[in-house]
Image (cartoon, rainbow, N blue to C red):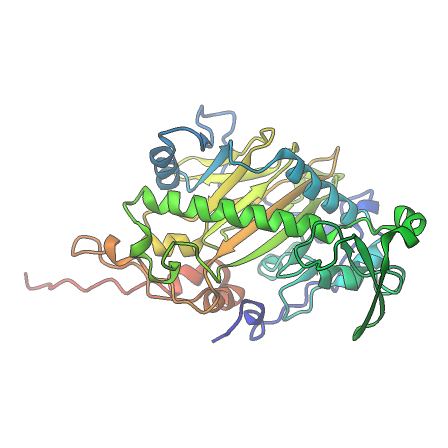
Length: 405
């Protein structure tokens, strides 16, 4: 059993890069990316009046509204969530700058076959015959690892990290750390290198992702207790939540997604249908449409981008924790032929080695436990091997009925 989130794929490595193409330069859709079918569920946007719920977190009835949305949809949008639009725009700009790098530079940060962080195709790619019109950067932990791979010489030999408001800065004045070797750091005043700094700053600033991660963690914690509160669950009901429900040790991963303009979007797939393995996922999708979710009994519904809104969807672990009260929503990303779409997903989960099981308060004789306990690391490893069968593999056996009765 993997002991850390970063070890989850050690037992199931996947080489996702043998046919990695520079999607930004392709004028015709290659056969490797041409999908014969875009899914078994129909697209019903124009056929029904229903849409993904939009919830104002300042609404006094937010708890009830969130609970209803989770039970019926497994996804909703939130406004008045407390994260400044400037933070959302900054992470979108940083992501756009990353994906604008030359293909050969992005490949320097290629995710190892058995690794978690880095650049490349999505982990679900091996389960589909065709490739997806997609590029992604996964960040687990500090973004400095990503920066060091993308700029190993041009920037890192001159400076390593910009300290302004960083909590790790112990000095009074802003500085730049100059990297001579991995073990030897030299610091000099920012003013001494200001001309160079202004013209050579990497197009990706680590502080942007660190601030985004900080803001998202606070929101994710708030949302989780709101969701559980709608089921009558309080902080004392979740043993690993901590005395104040602060979820110390909770893990999170940041996923930067790019869907370049596609010459034949009706035959291409941005990100194929899947559920998330997290407790919950918070997505910022900017202003470009593409996200679709399945509404059971209907089909694919587009989640329209709203200025400043965030999309929240239930993941597999919260589906387990809620004893199947909340469905983990099936979703995908479509592409268009006119502009690149950038989205940023924040996957929020429990400590990697803490067993997650249906909360006892939600289990009784009428509602037996649907799933056995499983850690996030174990579940990720299971999903890496079995994909959409993972939930069924941790499902409790259905009790046999007595045929003589």
